[in-house]
Amino acid sequence: MKTTNYKARLLIFTWFTFAFLWSSSGANANNINKYIVSNNTNKSTLTGSYQDVYNLYQEGNDFYNQKDYLKAISAYEEALSINPNFDLALNGKGWALRELKDYVSALDAFSQAIVINPGSYAHWQGRGNVLYYLGRFEESLSAYNTSLNINFNSDNSQAGKAWALAKLNQYGLALESFDRAIEMDSQIANYWSGKGWVLYELGRYQEASSTLERALELNPSDRFAQYYLGLIEKGFVG
Image (cartoon, rainbow, N blue to C red; front, side):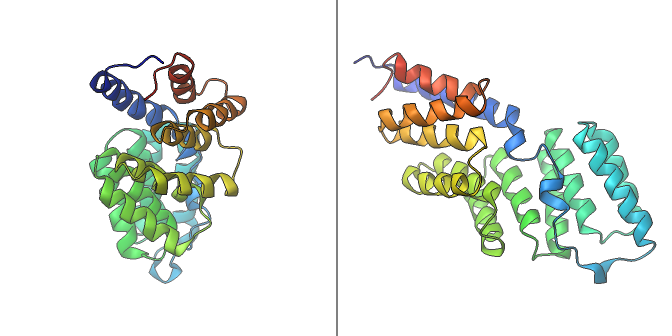
């Protein structure tokens, strides 16, 4: 069985993981409405014209979904200029900043949203996401756990928790979280590719192979699944 230099493989893995997570933002944030439209806004904090604020918020969502993140931020900030306590706009601003890789500012936006509405699982989910990108994996895990304590049925928070656990080398627990995410939504390719990666790290190569193949059935262009399946097929195991 072929083997490869561990340090070299680790460097390749680290680069590929971050490239994958950025390019695969569809599992985390490509449709902002999945995260924030369902959020339980604390309406007691709303001031000014609610309809004006909400219209600006929806305008921000539209720009976000068109991937025009600067215009999205502008719309969210205009809503916040009318009502600084509108936590949905802060959440949307956080995701838009995240897409622009301004993780520090995104973290600040999510943190402000949490102060206003700490009972929103979506705000904690956003916080967990940007903490992950900042390399603060233990804090990311804590944020995802808080999100799941509020809403255990969030597949995205389960998957986010799985990624954070895996970065902390807690592969067994990561596998459990990926399985829960897949139970909730089995049509997300990178839940399967994430599970395949964890199985690879656990040395369960046959299971990893079939799991990665499932990811590619759902998304033939999933580069993460292609990469790890390629390692297995070429014998780079152990």
